Amino acid sequence: MVSIEIVQQWKATKYIGIIGLGDMGLLYANKFSDAGWKVICCDREDFYEDLKEKYASAKFEVVQNGHLVSRRSDYIIYSVEASNINKIVEMYGPSSKIGAIVGGQTSCKLPEIKAFEQHLPKDCNIITVHSLHGPKVNTEGQPLVIINHRSQHPESFDFVNSVMSCLKSKRVYLTYEEHDIITADTQAVTHAAFLSMGSAWAKVKVYPWTLGVNKWYGGLENVKVNISLRIYSNKWHVYAGLAITNPSAHQQILQYATSSTELFTLMLDNKKQELTERLLQARKFVFGKHTGLLLLDDTLLEKYSLSKNTVNDDADSKPLPNSHLSLLAIVDSWYQLGINPYEHMICSTPLFRIFLGVSEYLFLTPGLLEQTIDAAIHDQSFRKDDLEFVISAREWSSIVSFSNFELYKKQFQAVQEFFEPMLPEANLIGNEMIKTILSHSKETLTGKY
Image (tube, rainbow, N blue to C red):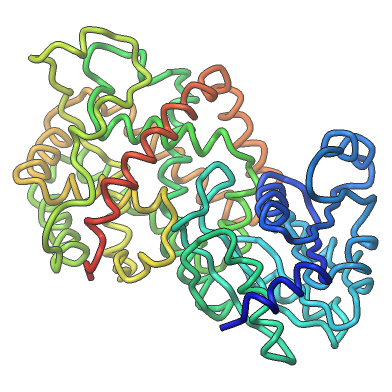
């Protein structure tokens, strides 16, 4: 435990440097400087004049480039795209202050650690971090992974912990290998599911909340729409970095596409018994030890709809039966890969907890899974949507398997452009929904598993 006096001394004498002033870099810069740390930041040199003017009244200092950050900073954090981490560390790493601590914020640590080992001076300490949430989420109580990869003195690790304490996050200490496996387990298929939903809607040029009286009505549908749009309101590289640079994520995204395809094929072939047996096996594997309350309930989410259709307020209005293929496929993926999603809850993102919650609701609410299977076999209402969803899931899997950042960016931004008119409103509603869900599920998770 570091004394208050030592922390105050560090704040008076040491500098924190942030290379990359994107959304997460800016979040850290504000949090650290508000807590009394001396913070120096930079972004691309051609952005310098604009950033200097934009943040003239900020508590942190903006300098021209990473060399100036590196020469002065005692702790340097690279907050850059995963696809650029090696190039930028190669550029600025040799300028690191003697004995500096260096880390990064990327969601996949393997390429980050390789870049640090290759390009940093040997006297530098490598202690890297990953906040498991987006820049618009309150950091308090969210998971924060700290990886002490290389440090000469215990004081270095104490210093990083002291800096990060102002985030009020739940700190988790892992190796970079453990981190990459866990983030793949908790994020890869979750992102693939929501990306595929948005892509499918965009391809048929449909805003789902404007269709029919009851087609996309109900709490589960609100989650699908709001979270999908929330993902597409962020920057493409946030998701591309995890999917493409993390080898563990490749296998999971491929399995998600495979599960989607195989389950849909069983629906088309009217193989109800085979579909039922497969999903019951998945339920037993994933939720077999489940006890107590569900993380979510459908009625909690019904008010978070983008639809302006007042007919849905009718007490007799009920959602159309839905195959919920996106949810079935993620639970089937966990089963096929042998992943227990509850094992990594300490490192779970808000989106993962929400998706786990709606999956729990679908598989554990009495009679709902059976109703869903029946709709998947006999009801044609969502058949076209499911086809587009399967195609989209396979497309995302192919893009990731080819490790093509440019194709990922092109696909993501095309969908983003389609939904752009609704993104501001979707973010407002989505933020409120997430606050409600996380507040509701906090006590439910306590002590479970």
